[in-house]
Amino acid sequence: YMERRLVKILVDNDWMLRRTVRRLHEAEIAGDNIELMQRYKTTAERSFYRSLNALQQLRKDLMRQDRHAEWWKDRAGKLEKELEKRPPAPAEEPKGKPEEPKAKAETALTKAQQLFRGQKNPKKRKKTPILDQWIEIEIQDGKTVTTLYPPNEQLIKQGQGMLPPPEMVYRRLHFVHGVPAEYNWTTDDPVTRERGGMGTQRMMVDTWLELIEREKASGTGHVGPCGGNLPRPESRGGCDCEVCSHNRAILEAREGE
Image 1: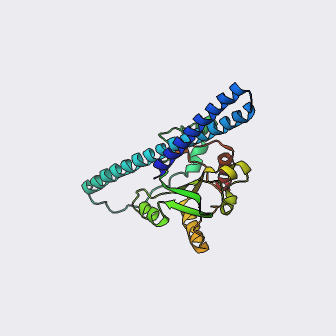
Image 2: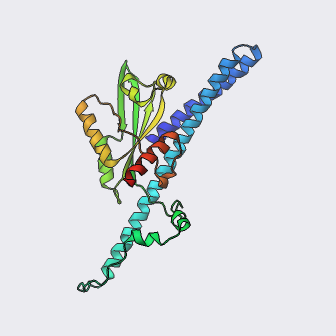
Image 3: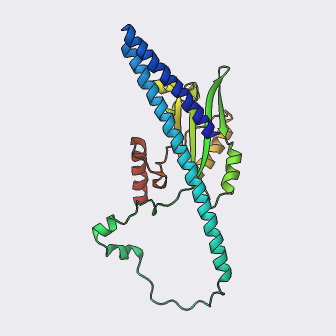
C-alpha cells in the first residue's frame, strides 16, 4: 500500500509541475504574473522531488529489510546444522587468570587506531530491523480521518514473525488535505499546515508499544507524538539534517553518561 500510495502522490505532483511550467510559459508570453507563476513552479518542483525521494527511500528500506531477513534465515539454518554436528561439551574446568577488561586493552591503542577502525563502513554497520507503518490523514465530510496501513495489531503480528526481532518502528505520515487541528503538533509551518505533505516518526519498539496504548486510550482514532524522533540509523544510510543531528547528539550524550 505504501508503495502504491507514494507512486500516486508522485504522479499527482508530476502533473502539477507540468501544469505550473505551462502556466509560467503562458505568463511569460502575456508579460503578467511571472513572479507568481515562478513561485508556484518552485513549490511544485519541491513537492515532486520530495515525493520522489520518499518513494526511493521506501524502496531501499524494503529491499534492505528483505535482504536482512534472508541473511538471518540462512545464518540460522547454518548454525542449526553446526550445532547438530558438535559433540557434547566437556565438563567445565577451573578458569585461569581472568582476561584484561576490554577498556584497558583499548587504551593500548593509539588515538588514530581508536578513531579509524572502519566503524562506518557498510560491512561493519549493524543491521537495524524495523517495522514500517503508513498513516493516511485526510478530511472526509469535514472530519479528520486517520487510517493505519497496516493496523497496529497486524504490525505486531508481523514483528512476531521477524528474526532478529524489530528494534525500531517507522511511521510515515501523509497529510492529504493539509494538516488538521488534531495534528498541529507535527509542524509550526503555516504553509505545511495549509498544503499538507509527508513526515516520518522514528522510535524504538518499546516506545511505539507505549504510544499505541495511549492512542487507544484516547479514543480519538488519531496518532500522537512519540516524544522526539530518533535519528536515522547509520545502517539505513544515516542522515545529517538539523533534526537528526540534534537528536543524535542527545543520544550520544546519554550514552556517555
